[in-house]
Amino acid sequence: MIGAPDPTEVLAALLDRSVARIAELTADGPSFDRTGVVQVADVWCNNSGPLFGALTAPRRQRAACGRTALEWMAALGSERRQWVVEQAAVAGYSLETLPPAAPERHRDCRGLVHPGVQPLSASLGEDYDLGRACIDSIRVERAGAGLRGYVGFEVPRRYGVPGAAKVQLYLTGVGDCRFDDGDGDGVALTVGEDGADVKFGHRGFARAASAEVTIEDSSWHLSRAGRVADATTPPWQPQEETGLRQPSGAAYSAAFALYEVMLRIRMVRYAKMVGAVPLAELAELLADAGSAARSAARRPWGFRERAFARLAERWSRRVERPHRPPAAPGDHLTLAGFGTGVMLNSAVRNEKGTWELRSAELPRPERFSLTVRDHCIAVDGEWSNEAGHRNT
Image 1 (cartoon, rainbow, N blue to C red):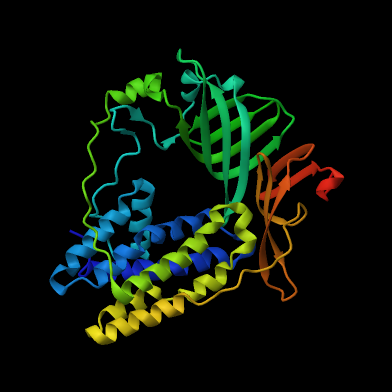
Image 2 (cartoon, rainbow, N blue to C red; image 1 turned 180 degrees about the vertical axis):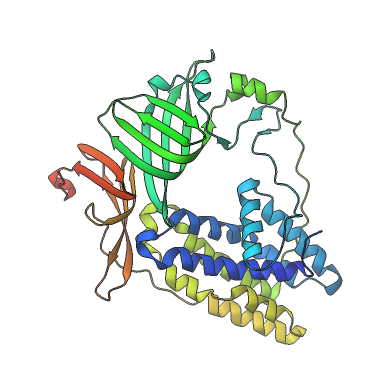
């Protein structure tokens, strides 16, 4: 049983808290938390319909529909469940009795085991030849007062199946970091109680408080780690229908308008879109959306339809796309990434004296380096004259 008198009240409070959280993560440009914004918006891209379905359910079914919607919201992995519990607690509700999230390690319909997201361990080198790993992308970005990082690389298998796997490292609490694209191949891992050290090439490194790994490998079930996991992973079970109630009429229009705004906010999952999404304005548009939706649902039928229609109209209001200068290497960088090209996000004070988020996607340079020192992100490189940039 959910630890609240009315689960729809909890859902509405979670929406209010989510919008407020997006505004918080966006308010201070130099500390802009892009991935935090994406995490929050993603919740409501999948849960706007169930929220309004529960709010408009017949009185006797409302609590059950609300509980189902909350449990479904929290079921998408341990990270999502933790987010739901933490944000509900901030709003004044205890959800510790939510069912546990599905384990990250799982089987597909063929019965083959897959790793999911796992804590990084140096044992990764037992199944993959890390000394021959080829880094294809790296990224460091602000996350409030700290930094997050990402390293992606192709690495040959060691366990007797020809070919390579795609490995992705997600770093939290990044300290110092150095990457040079001409530094050579190879990855070395040191993981302990003090955190994770990732070395790449001859001189490159990244130090983090913690790290997780995902492995894209169609033969992972044949690896050493896969065989160990196979012995303890439960059999595959077909998913049961959740029975989520969906809204209709004007409530559906309001739910769809909320979904569209959250979808637009979530566009910053692509770093190149950060300068093109009016995050602060969209968060202001949705302020107190949960309370407004719950208030509309409490009205008598005829008045309720009109109240939901007004919410749909309000949330569908046009918010213009900002036109900002591109981010530049010399800006206060909030993100720097290297892959097929260079991705930059920055925070710059504009003519009004407020922080402005900018983004730029630059072509792959002739030379590139990325460093983090004293929690400051810096890049250096050489671009051809055709690219319009030359930093040395």
